[in-house]
Amino acid sequence: FGRQIKLLETVPSTQDELRKLAEEGAEEGTLVIAEQQTKGRGRMGRYWVSPAGKGVWMSLLLRPPVPLPLTPQLTLLAAVALSRAISRIVPLEIGIKWPNDLLVGGKKISGILLESAAEDERLRYVVVGMGISVNLDAEDYPEELLEKAVSLKMAAGAPVNRSELVASILVEFELLYDLFLEQGFAPIRTLWEAHSVTLGHLTTLFTPQEAIEGIPRGLDDMGGLKVEMADGSLRTVYSAEVGVRQE
Ligand code: BTN
Image 1 (tube, rainbow, N blue to C red):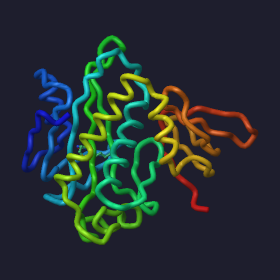
Image 2 (image 1 turned 90 degrees about the vertical axis):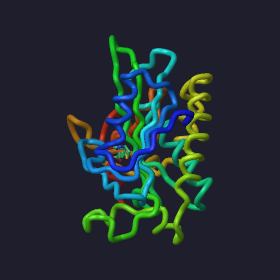
Image 3 (image 1 turned 180 degrees about the vertical axis):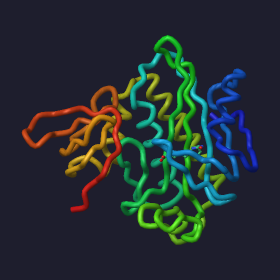
């Protein structure tokens, strides 16, 4: 990964830049990195704060060689890759909140956004957007985000080298992706479960249809979250916003 890297100064979103390249035939592993995004986007149509020179704002192109079902598997893989890559560079304990938010001390340091192009139920390509709040200071965040978000620098007390971080992410991502293509989701699932801060805690899951309350117990083969309900029955959730209740 990263044999083709496009470094840009200011873009609306690295996701759109990479999608253009993907449509023009760019190879798997192509990476677009920007110093600053003016319209960085997050999951659920939210805005992603991406100030100049302070974070890693990048998108990575995957072209899975086998037809993959449209499941959360790659999203979860990305979360594991990022959390392992970051903890190699910065000595911080990183937890994954389902499906793919990375937290330090309960606050978000990184988010992942997968966008895919499919045809006839088959994935043509996947654009993996990764945003890591590396060297942001408190004043870079809108007031209301400060209680929910933190940067690596704020959490670790020292600035972090962004190039080292990007290199570490590419290595870790390629390793896990190869493992996934060879052995399927099982090893990724085990790693994800080990890093999870969602499992075992009473949680409210806001699915597109309803709010579900229960205790997440693990992942299924597709990457869905298995939730134990009050009556002991299990439900599997594939897409939801998670509110972890503070205990
Ligand atoms: C989230 O947690 O909601 C996902 C955030 C994803 C942000 C990254 S930054 C690089 C890429 N370009 C974007 O516009 N978004 C992703």
